[in-house]
Length: 263
Image (cartoon, rainbow, N blue to C red; front, side, top):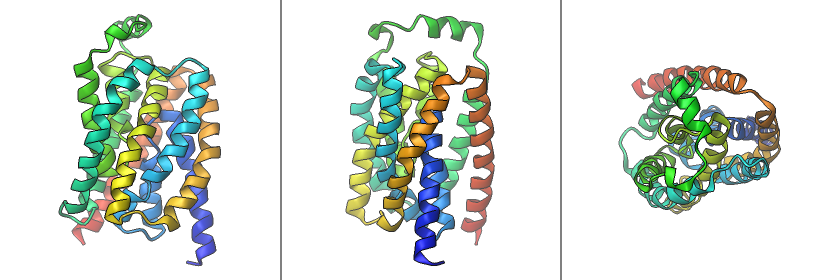
């Protein structure tokens, strides 16, 4: 493939990544990782090269959501410190884990499928009441946020997906945030957690800038479009999009990487 075509396709992939990232709050690497794998990246490069693009995407989307009052900063402050330390550990573990990166891809597929199922379900009456009453910082116990941060940070570094795959269903189901607040708050955390993971992958030599830089260019306009759509969408529309998009990606992801690992 000519270099110019690879760069162009990677930028277009970045636009789609940014749009998905800001729309559902999961970091967007669920698209960019298999995308750059198809364009020639190795499995470990697929994990490491997506993380740098998460930060500009998350900043763009988070600023839009913050203007709408959708980002719960008490949750961000309690999740991020735990997640940042765990992201470094996850990034180190990913390099030394057996399977040459294919196992991480398969785990990602399973988590994507879980998030699609969990988040696309309509809330129960109790969840709706709880979400409407979430106004005080005291509701977000440190141990809940810390547990979510540890898990999300490990996933961010280990799988290169930003950690939103875990935070979205946990913010929704465990902290009882509304769906739009879940997306916005997860995206804010995702951007910060991507920083230590990116630095660690850079140090380990698993970031290929031939893929990472075009992704960074494409995610910014994509994130603006995604956040704009989400602010105006209904919860039902958002649930359907999450279920269909992530469910389809999970199936494709799992099939492709299982085949690659077997061969």
